[in-house]
Length: 137
Image (spheres, rainbow, N blue to C red):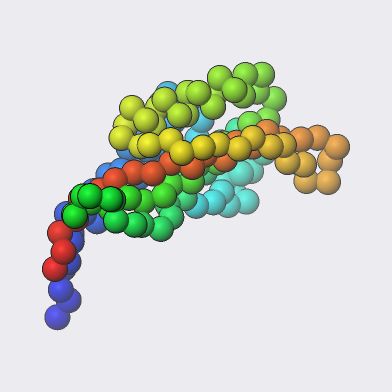
């Protein structure tokens, strides 16, 4: 017999992930992937162009002073090839997620080498947190 525990919270997590993808794709016009981009996705969906977002969910911790609330870390990586206004995109990502209940923590901007070529791709790594209520069993 399988015991179903915290099904409402688990469904909320799925809805948060779906909303993150939808909102970023709609507001930025960039394809969003969870955890990684496969080689086939990179070649077929992205046509070999580094212009996409990857998000990963991280660990959880109890929210201070809120007994039945957890905070979860969410890492968002934005890859931009041949994008003129990367800082503007950075602001758009922050405002999009903050307007959907995420709390911006910080971001770091770097350039990564594109394969063996003498070309570089901008990468911005964002750290956010999101909260969710749960019921202890």
